[in-house]
Amino acid sequence: MVSPNKNPTLALIDELLAEQSRLQTPVARFAATHFDTHHSTLSSQLIPLSKPKPGEQYAFEVDLDSCTGCKACVSACHALNGLDENESWRDVGLVSGGTRSAPYQQTITTACHHCADPGCLNGCPVLAYEKDPVTGIVRHLDDQCIGCQYCVLKCPYDVPKYNERLGIVRKCDMCQQRLGVGEAPACVQACPTQAISIVTVTTYVDGQLKPDTSHFLPGAPDASITRPVTRYLTERPAPANALAADNSMLRPQPAHWPLAIMLTLLPLAVGAQLGALSVSNNLKYADNATGDLTLFGVVAGALGLAASVVHLGKPLRAWRIFLGWRKSWLSREAMIFGGWFGLAALAVIRREALPLAAATGIIGLFCSVMIYVDTHRRLWRFAQTAPRFLGSALILGAALVFAFRFETKVSVIVLGALTAVKLMCDLRLLRPLEWVEEETPVTQENYAARLLTGPLRTLFGLRIAAALFTAIILPFLVTAGKLPPVASWFVFGSVLLGELVERHLFFRAVDAPKMPGTSQ
Image (cartoon, rainbow, N blue to C red; front, side, top):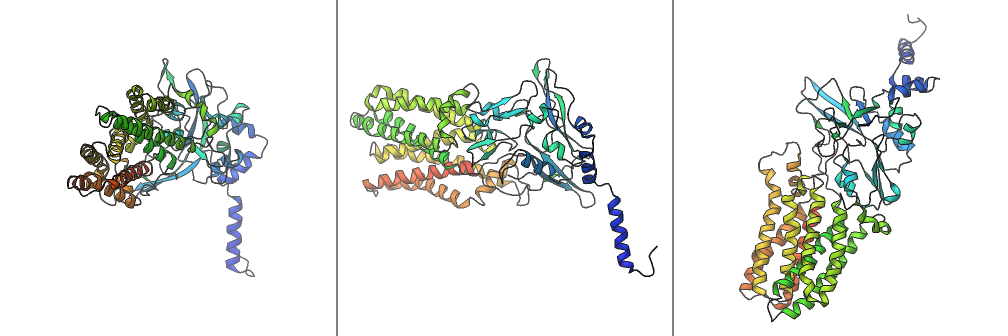
């Protein structure tokens, strides 16, 4: 009852404040639980009491219905692991959908899924990852990492994060040291609603790798690629139209300029050798072909290999890159191109080594193709990547033959035809725009198309213009005799620029997979 001498508004405020002090909010329950004498009881509820049995491993289990999106897990992970300001090993995202009368919204917390068949481990060229044989935790070995960032491309869930200050990649290790002494990981312990816990899951059945991925998050990247073991539980199934809150956001990916330069110069080097072979049977050009084209290829290859080293965060550790040759295409590429460079240098002084050097270079380019095919990204599938890389070698080789004035008309015809074919491969990327509307959700099929016609349209237009010049205008000028000899090197520069821009777009326009709703 309100006192007659007290303002009614103030009395109401006092009553509401008193009521709030009696409420047991999630944060209040969390604080009371963590600071009482029964803290060990809580930990025992959030982590297994015993180690996994053979064929089992630890996994995160997330109760989506209890997750409020407070990001206490993100803050705790950041603080306990001493991460840099913009570094995060755990993310919280948002998925929404439903109808106006029955809206749906779900916050999602996600970290490393400690996959049963981890892509980061399989792709690492220096064996900087290991999967604990007892707990199944996938750990990153910081002192072994060379900073190549291939694991970032291999992981479908955007888990490994590159630290520019340290020059290496780092990731969640489920706070393995805390688990070893019976303590819950930072994210698990910090969650005020106990939405995150550690459970034991079965990964091997009858000696075969068969983890149960039925409880993985709907709408996430294909679980069959790496077989993640994280369990997402909910009693509210997502509606069919549920989408990540950032689904329509277009994000051009990092340019990786050193890699773009390397993947332009190495095809140029191999193309130079193929060009030398193509004119070696012509007695008029045989000596010049060996002396000029082959030497040009060696120089281009040396510059390309140097650019690849610049890409590494820890280049002094690059000597270890052969260690992962059994599983990593990156390791195989480095080894083959290392051998190729020796053969290419030998071919400068001994023409007999040129065919073997060219064949080795083609094998190296095939490994380059498989590096990106193995990431399972739509833009980098074999049908797109192989014509680009191998086509670059043929196109740049033909352009170089034309620049040196060896068999001019033949090289121009070959150059124009190959460029036209490669241009068709580039334009194929726009096909998804033929059957989608502007408000259609961004998918893997139309993501690259929207990037190329949106944020990257200027560069894509430059690429198309350079290709049209080479495929249409150049043959006409040569046939009509209107192109002076000195202009041949300007033509080569135009072709080289077009290939470099295409390789730049190869990295920037890719559809990088990640967990739904999480930012990159």
